[in-house]
Image: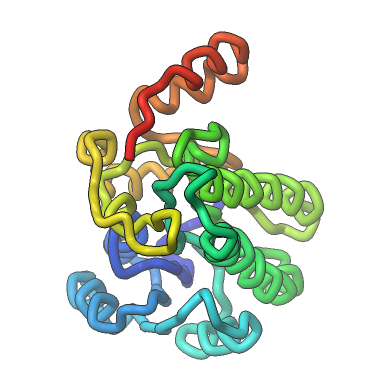
Amino acid sequence: MTSLTTSTIWITGASSGIGEALALDAAKRGAKLVLSARRVAELERVRAACPDPSKVALLPLDLMAFDAAEAVAKAECFFGPIDVLVNNAGKSQRSLLVDTSMDVYRQLMELDFFAPVALTRALVPSMRARKSGHIVMISSIAGRIGAPLRTGYSAAKHALAGFTEAARAELWRDGLRFTTVFPGYVRTSIALNALSGDGQLHGMTDKHIDGGIDAADCADSIWCAVESGDEEVFMGGKEVAYERLKRYLPGLFSFALKRSNVNR
């Protein structure tokens, strides 16, 4: 099992939303933290909110243009080897397939899939050498359900889940653990910051996000799963039940999904 109290945890996308909530919760549990995001001022705000800011290091990082090996080396300079990597940074989408440019699809795959894969690949050798380490991949319920207006986002999150499942099967003998997280609707700015078909920000929230679970509750569920060694964890409302419906009654699920309201 993974003990947060004795761990050094690296969280990407830590300046807001689920990443911020994960950082604050882990800090309360006594972990040492390395926090990454592009917005330095927001990272400073998160660090100041932690019980002991001296145990929180900031590593500003643009995951659309970075060197993974260099980033890992910098992260391990603060408190030593990274025990837990949380690949949380990502971006969603709100656009129909016919309205979405290939550049937007590439951006989504780069940030939501290739960046976490790159960081994981760069960090795994040191974890294997220590026979210890935990990788947490924040996928999405869209990584199980291909929802309308999210063709690129769903593709990237499905890919991330598949990568993690295969990596877990390869590396468990080396002492590495992998937890894939499938959040449903969480009250964050994910819809506001989602990409439109032309690459502009969506700039609007929606009733599903506004009615979602609190980010702090999501973070607590994630850390409980990590400490318990769970391989997969789902959290949210009725959208999580849709995933079960897809597994056990795929025909009914498909019928319902095709007739769902397209929510921009």
